[in-house]
Image (cartoon, rainbow, N blue to C red; front, side, top):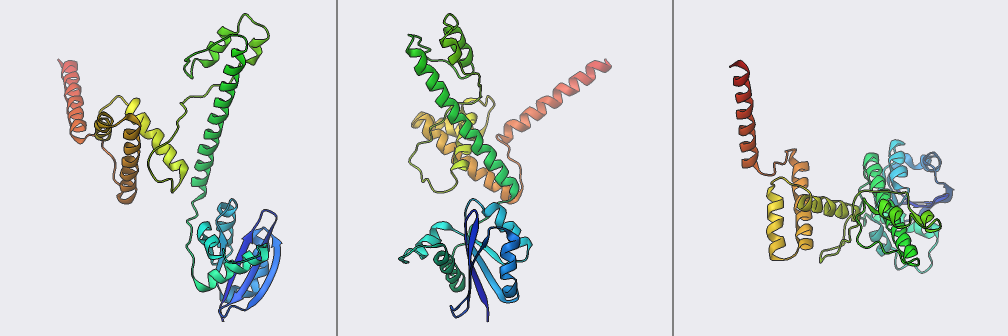
Length: 291
């Protein structure tokens, strides 16, 4: 006889349900959401415990690796797939959700979700908080602009880097409005990602690719095949569509680099030419030193 377990994870407590290969329930209990507590209640079934399932959630990056370290055959489930599988149940409770996940584990009708490494989650959180700070900065900037309008002060088009100084200069003669001034400063520009593309997948990855593509198209001064290709698209269509196309191209290139471990050379011919020029300059300097 084999056993299958479903976990309905919450912040404080987790509903646990264990069924056998015939669908009979052998355990229904709630325990603290701690790896050691979960292992303690499942320990009698470990020898014949085939799969332990839980939905992907905010606690998954921490709970999933810890359960694996304890030797449990844990599987992180794709959330939409689980919801579709249990959509027919009339009453929704933690115990019933755990039972439903246990039966999904028993039947094998599930789709596993990939749990990223801790380093990936740390980088993701860093980018998420950076985006949140940018939004807060924009909110404060707009609030300052709106407040100054009440006193007839119009800032107009001011760059992000000069906003602080522009506000101080505009409100320097008024002791009341001088204290509305924001002291924060942040590099970068606000980006509104809109396009006729699918919104499936990781939003942070799409945002990072768009920012990288925009930087390549507008700030990078060197020559590059992808940049040239994007500029041609911009001439035929528009700049925003070109940036979206370049972002997709960057994703394809990085995936290829990740797969075979090669390095990207934007313009191989130009790179060789630059290398030859540098070699000639170095040789001339060497000859001049010995002349």
